[in-house]
Image (cartoon, rainbow, N blue to C red; front, top):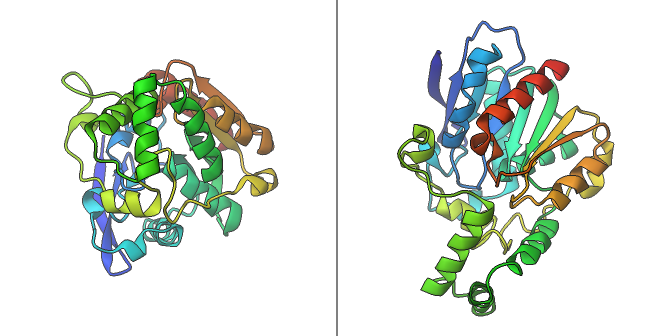
Length: 294
């Protein structure tokens, strides 16, 4: 499989990109938007197989502030405008005139902002992977799931939220438990390299744009809400989520019910990264759905 890597200029910095697959493929490329803010493209490498199995280019990049596009000390950058401009710059620089876009978690927020509120020529379809249409709705669902934790863990989280102090061992243990139940577990020997190798996460980007944890949106994205725009969408849309996901079935259903003609696939035994936890099933779904839209 051919892998091409490089960087493009963005603002006064550089954005890293990675393309798997044949550059002469006539199939519409799949562009991947990772989560966070401040995560990296790494976990998406489990989808490289689609370059061979489906004969299309798989394009990913590290958003400014993390990974091979790491940057900190610039809190003024960590907002929707910055990352939206970067998405447009990546499409232009890589000549992605026609494209299908998959956004996972925060990446899905970025994708929804793009297709709901901005010109998006050449977008042939979207995949909303474990994402959200509203920060407020997300927070409400995280609060509901917090109530399912053991009482000791719940109390530790509520003390931290009340005091604004997230440094205690009790809180960190509670957050680790919550994330292991609904986000992802610890990866190790036998797991794909892209899930285990060190990654430079953008902690400043996450804290500034989202907040101290998944259940407390206090940053520049705290008022994100495209719920009212979903019904106007005229793109083929695939929604995927896990049965134990931070993106609860209720959140996924809100998107599915609102987006005309959308398809929703629930991976019952998965958490926030169903594309990694059920890689075979997820890739089979993508091959089938992509064939119908591109």
